[in-house]
Image 1 (cartoon, rainbow, N blue to C red):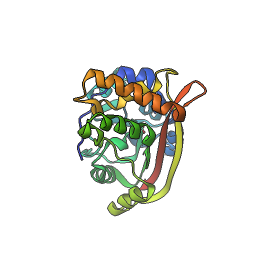
Image 2 (image 1 turned 90 degrees about the vertical axis):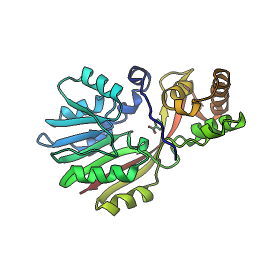
Image 3 (image 1 turned 180 degrees about the vertical axis):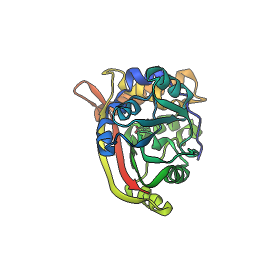
Length: 255
Ligand code: BEZ
């Protein structure tokens, strides 16, 4: 499986993709942070949810692989500790009471290593509360993108695997294999309204699917974007809004 480094446009993320963290509020309710707890926000992006957790717990650390996101997080919330780090290869001297992660773990193809790091990063009895893309996430959008690439001979691009979208069965087995006790697991359909009525799907592709278009000439990119948008319109455009076919997996597990 090929995984490419992804450079984030933190400004575009904040302007047009704020739904990523807007949805995180109910996950914080599930986390139920306590004032004395030390909490890690794994894949914190530009720090909005880290900030919300910080209002409830004193010792919060936000970690993200993207330097651009961490810079933005640090600028927005200078009173919070943010670090650049890889979810599949991290270690902190002091253990956490809880590890929280929203809409990030599907970027971690080395998921078994991430699970091992989370387990080792928790204190005995500590919990992980996470949500990310589950089985069949964005299948309609990305399936069409792959088809449009393949049709034009961009075979390598059409086969790119950027994400890990597991079923509950697969992920909870992997958690139990390292010793986690899973207390809650849910998979659910969450069609997600995109920010901009007319260009929503194209904006989503530009934000999240750039690696699929590497090595594709500008004229073909233009055609592909238009074709993907036109083909998806009957399925994903409703009442003047574009919806991404998000499926979520939500897990609580204890060390
Ligand atoms: C998601 O949050 O499900 C997601 C975001 C970007 C790309 C793929 C999936």
